[in-house]
Amino acid sequence: MLENVGLHVRGIDANFIYIEDPSCILRGFENFLHYAWMVLGLFTAGLVIGWGISMIRGAKNDIKENFKTLVLIFGILTAVWPILNLLYGGDLLGMGCKTMRISVGGVNEILAARVAARGTNAMLYEDIDIYDSGSGLFPTYEMPEMEDFPDLSDLMNWTPDGTITGGTPGIATVPTNIPPILGGGRTAIAATNSSVGEITYTATDGSQYTHVGGSLTWRANNPGALRDSSFTRRMGSIGITINGFAIFPNPEVGRNANIALLKNSEYQNRTLAQAIARYAPSSDGNNPTSYAARLARAIGVTTNTYLRDMSDIQIQRMAEGIRRIEGWREGSIRNN
Image 1 (cartoon, rainbow, N blue to C red):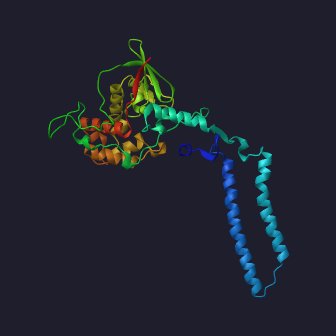
Image 2 (image 1 turned 90 degrees about the vertical axis):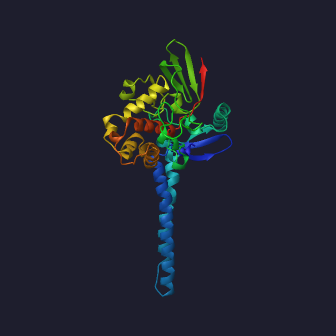
């Protein structure tokens, strides 16, 4: 998990995990020395073979001088690393990215608590945020691979009220692990997110309740995983998560905000492929090509279809598909 968020795990023992910031420029210098040693070794091997062949053919080589040159080159290369370590307190990373320690026991306690609260299917990558609190940069969540996407096969006949359009009448089939958004329930007027995995809401009557576990999208009433912005605030968001997502007063408001965004000119004048490349860019760890392809098949269009040419129901099906792909999963609600 630590390595997947970009950290270098330098070692582990019974008590600690030792990690470092991979952006340290000196670590790149260490890698350079490592590869320089390898290249120099290969070059030296070639020289030795060349000397041997030339001596067999009767050429005269000053073996002593050649040997001195090799010793000098390897000596300098070997001495660079310990000299730098000595200058920087025994650790080349001492210039700003020293190795840090994480308690193995502490990590195990966190994991055990999550599994106990959520069961063995706990999505630890989403429940635990790992980031440098002093950097101002917050974690992003990677898009699952295409085969891991939830089932979208029913969206062709899905309508907002849950009924089938055409075919046998009845309720649309929605995967049991991604239930439909239902109206009603509580509506909040304020929200705070002070710890990972929990968002506390204040209802219109002043009572407080907390969304615990589940997916980030469910906890924040944000089925489209919309980042906090002036747009989401205009659409009624009431807070922001610690990693920058908007919090809405209830799921319906969050869904309406997502649909409104897709109907905005910024998206309407783009093809489905272009819209998803903007909505879920690869720079955030997404796979926009697979994302768009799944949505296109699910709502009955091609990835080259402009959103302005889609009907209202297709836009709503698109929003529903986004909700599922973003991993909507309900947790529990605790009354405070």
